Length: 263
Image 1: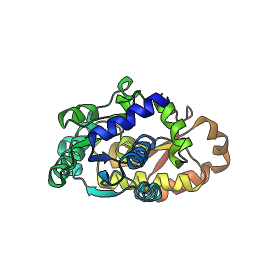
Image 2: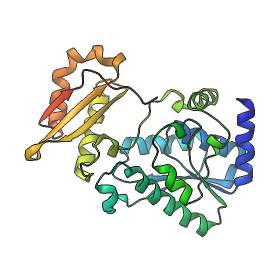
Image 3: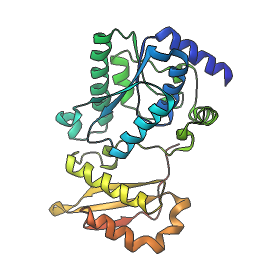
Image 4: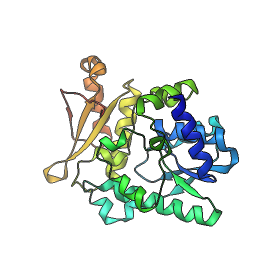
């Protein structure tokens, strides 16, 4: 693992000055921290801000970057104006990443950054990641993957650096809560965000509020709670249903299988 970190640092030096796509998640936070330690002012983090990013996630990401000491800028992305994204196909993530990388490409040219990088790790090739195609089209590098760092290793190394993301659950964008084929709208994203904020306020840590549109335009929340937290459900079921109804869901379905994070 130490050799991998050395390879990562060497790769970052070769890529400087460097733009990093930063979300505040496990991978990009570790990449940002190592890049800052290795390159100092010769790197800049870029956060894509759109309705699919929860406000709380944006605040946490900015606070973490400040704690690390790394410079970060927020870029407003416009994927919600792209019908290909809004129609929510299986490769929806491609259009989101392409929009982000196009913005970063313009920024790199304007400010003379040599390279764009993002937080793909060595495990990601085993999963369906439409964003990989966009990364290839914009020649975006993946230093973590190039160094051979896996998710488990990144969490371990993040823990050593004292990063709060070391044990943080995955938090993909809000659009991922909407089934493919159901259009992504700002209203739906707002409902999911408010619903998940409420569920989190009750003390749940790992969960998803799935946004289901039923016949007649009614909305149903499919709530998935991590199995290890489901013992709290019986005493909180009424509160959960009431809170989700308050944000616009007519009914709430609690998935008996719970939520399991992807391998």
